[in-house]
Image (cartoon, rainbow, N blue to C red; front, side):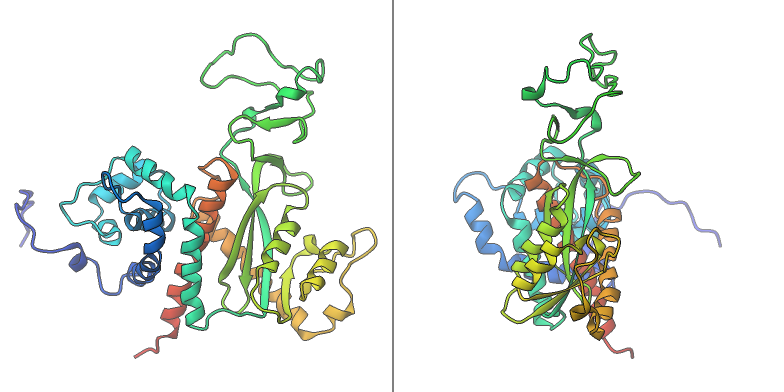
Length: 375
C-alpha cells in the first residue's frame, strides 16, 4: 500500500538530540575525548573572561563548533552556523537543544577571535596528547619530522614593493600610476619586475613570504607548517608554523626536537632536505640520532655516515617517516589548510595546531576502535 505524502509539521517532539544520534556514531568517542580535554581547561577559560558583564558564547561550545568545522570541512563560519541551525548531529555535538537559538555568524566570529588571541589551541592539543600518553600510545624514543608549504590567504596582487624600496626600482617594472580599471579587482602587470621578499611584502598579510616547493614550481605567498610525529602510531606530538624561508624546516625541526622531554637519546627520521652538516651536528648536540635520508647529490656529499645507516633502526625510521605525509594530507584536504583563511603568523599557527589536535582525535578514535576485541 502506498503511503501518503503527509507534510504537516508536528507541534511537539519528545526526542532529544542525544536520542537521535546512534550509539555507534563515529563522533561519540570524539565528543567524549573532547569533553575530557575541555573539563581540564576550565580554569584557563576562567582566566580569559571577566567576572561580570553579559555572558559570552561558552568557550566549550566555541571549540566544539570549530572542531566540527575542521572535521566536516565547512568552508566558512556563515555556512557553519547554517549547518548548526538544522543539523541535529551538529547540535548534539556542540551541546545545543532542539529549540536553542543559533548564533549570528558575526557574533560567532567575534567570540572566536578571543580564543585565537589566547594560547587555547596549544592547551587543547596538549590535552589530547595527555589522553594518548595515558593509554601508552606514544613512543618517547622514535620520531619523524617534516615540513610543508601552506598557501596564504593573500594574493600575489598584494605582494607590492615595500615603502622604503619605492623609487629604487624605477624603470624595472611597469608600476601603473593611472586609476585601476576595476577598483574591486584591479589588473596588475608585474612583467619585467624582479620581486623578492627583501624588496616586496604582502599588503594583506605581511607575514606571508614568497616561496616555492621546488625547482620549476610556481612561487606563492606561503607559510611553512612543520610537524613532529612519534613513530609507534603516527600521532602528532608537536606542530609549528614559521615564515617560509630557506631554512625554516630545519630550524623548526630543531626547535621541536629541543622540546622533547627527558634526557634519553632519541631518533628522528626525515627526508633529504634535513641532510646538512649543521642540522646533523645540532641533532647530535641535542642527544638526537638523525635518521634522515642521504642526499649524495649535495655539494660535499651526505652528512649521514655509517654511524647511522649501519643500524637496522635507520631503515625502520625511513619507512616510518612517510606516515607524516598522511598527517599533512588530512590537514590540507579535510581541515581546510590547503589554502589558509586567516592572516598573520599567530592566527595561522593557532589554526594549524588546532587542526593537528583534530587529527589526533580522529587517530585516537581509530586506535581505540582497533583495540576493542571483536565479538
